[in-house]
Image (cartoon, rainbow, N blue to C red; front, side, top):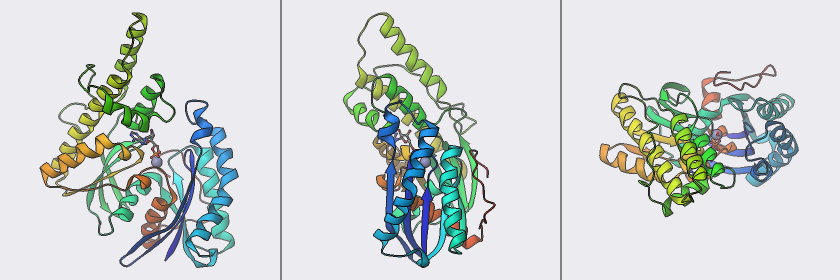
Length: 336
Ligand code: KG4
Ligand code: ZN
C-alpha cells in the first residue's frame, strides 16, 4: 500500500510517499523543504518563523511528493503525520493538513511519534530488519536508548537527563563560530584537531545507569573558551571540535555497550539527525564488530527529519489499528 508521510515537527517540512507491504519497503518520493537558511540568521530555530514556513511549504511539497511518486490522492492507503513530540506550532501545521486531507478524501489517518519515525527510517535502509532490537536515537531533541519490542512497542531504558547530543553539538558549534546547525560542521572540523588536546568531563553518568548528561561538558567547554578569551589566548577551533566530539562519542559508545550487554539484544539501530555523525558511526561500527552485534544505521539522507520515516512508522501503526480522527491534536511532549 502507498502511505503519505508528513513531517513538520521542527525546521523541516517534508512529505513522502512510501510503498509498504509483504516484502516491500520502497521510498517512491521524499521531498524535504529545509528552513535552515532562514533560521541561520538567528543562530537557532525560531518557533514562530518555523510554523509560518511550514504553512507556506506544505501544500506544494505534498503535490510534489505525489507527482514524483506518480500517484494521486485516491491511491493512498493511509496518511501518516508526526503528532508529537516537537514544536507545538510547527506540529499543528502538519497535523491539521493531514487531518483535512484524510477527512475530505476518506483516507485512514495515522498519528506518528517522531522518535518512532526516526527508528523506522532503519526499516527502509535495511529491508530485512525486524524487532526486537535495541535503538539509540540521537537527535537535536533526544538522546535515548529504547528496547523496541515490536514495531509499535517502545520501552525507554536510558538516555540523557538534560540536553540532547545534537543540541550540545549545535551550541558549541555556534560559540566557536560555525554556521547553524553546528553538528555537521563540527563533525568535519574534528578531523583536523587533536582529540586529547583539551581535558573535558565525560557525559557518561555512573556505572549503574545507562544515563548521560551533556550539560557538564557544555559548561566546561564554555568555561575553557571564556578563560582563553580572558587571557587573550587564541583558541584552536579544530582541537575544541576534536576534543568535544571525542568525549561525547566515547561516552555514547560506552553507554551503548552497557545497554547492549544489559538488554542482551543482538541488533542495534542508530537513528536521528546525529546518527549522521561520522565519528559516532565509526565508533559504533567498531563496538558492534567487537560485540558481534548487527548494526543498522539509516543512510545519511534518512537520518535527519523526513516524511519517508514517518510513512514507514505509520504503516506499522496502521497495521496495529492505531488510527485517529478529526479530534487528533498535536503535543509538544513525548506522549500524545
Ligand atoms: O533528527 P533531527 O534532524 O531533528 C530533531 O529531531 O532534532 O536532528 C537534528 C540534529 C541537529 O542538532 C544537527 O546539528 C544534528 O542533528 N546533526 C549532526 C550531524 N548532522 C546533523 N550532529 C553531529 N554530526 C553530524 N554530522
Ligand atoms: Zn528528528
